[in-house]
Length: 534
Image (cartoon, helix red, strand yellow):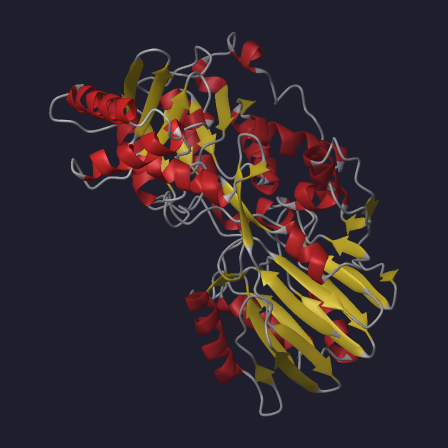
């Protein structure tokens, strides 16, 4: 059996792994990756190029999805638009995929825990794990005498409070039967101990809500229905109503009802309109925007831009979420704006009101001790996370066990007790404009960068009996606004008048660049229009 990670190894996101034998190939997860910085203007996320996938793995028999976070399902619409294969997953995750791919009508096959499915000569069993989204699973994969456990995203939570615990006994049984390879989440590999249970933060959240004098605005990751379930219980005990604001929260809430995880309670969950007749001290608004996103509800509320609802003195905002690396400054500014409005802010950086969905070192060690795998490979994380995971695994493993540090694209091959790493594939990522959900080609990205850093110049020429060139500039930094356009128009008119017989587009492009080179070091995007034609 070969295992080929196409993403999620050495970088966060775009999780995807191929498992294949000579006759069968399956893909585990196909997620998106958010850009690490803002230097790619208009790029909302990246996906593994579907052309690469279909060219190198043309006989894909099925897709298995571990859970419904965007870094595991977000790229599926691009692949399923071109490939008709069954997608096996749990009911809640299937509902989320159905919503994302509603125009495609994907072939979704819902599975049950611990009931193996056969795909060619590969057998896959979904094993329950706890995470920050419901119905998350690890996968036990068997083929040609080899056995692999793919942990997915997980933590060990004996008392998650949602009747969906970490199935440690099943992992133990699988370990007793023999596991050749454990592929394990490394997100929190640097953190010692066990990850705190979600149950451990409930009392603190409830205390803050009971102490709040007015309205409470509660934000967390919108997929975190386990936390919403606990919040529902807190709200009922505190005599408060819950209002969900933001499409993402509402989408996950409806999926959790369809999956029979939450039961709709009209006495607790009310609409924004119904909330208008409820006293402030009896309201909890659950809002999107825990990472300070400008388009999310919390940022709009902070800047008085959300459907007439505004934050006021005496309100409390609770951030029940961690700050994703790279968002620190944005969130700090948002909190500053909130406090400037005399809003009371409760953040997870100061109070125990959030816990991760990814296990710490002892969670990982516990999973390893249950499976007793011969080989262990760290996945899911930046290279530094994988390296730390790899180093302490070396101290943990027995003399007949091995850990391996791999990169995206490496071809891992199991041959009996042996594990061999072969030459890697070079896996290309495709930038996506989230407004239209379409790929961005190199030229479009270059044009956007030129506009972002140096502005835009539009050269419009009329070549009738008399030559006339007009210049419009956008986004240029000028000491004397309008002077550059005026001088450039005169220069181009003079040059074009002397070379009437030549190609005016080529002349204007060449002479524009020559003129601008003498003025500043920037490289603005130049658009040429001659007699109304570009």
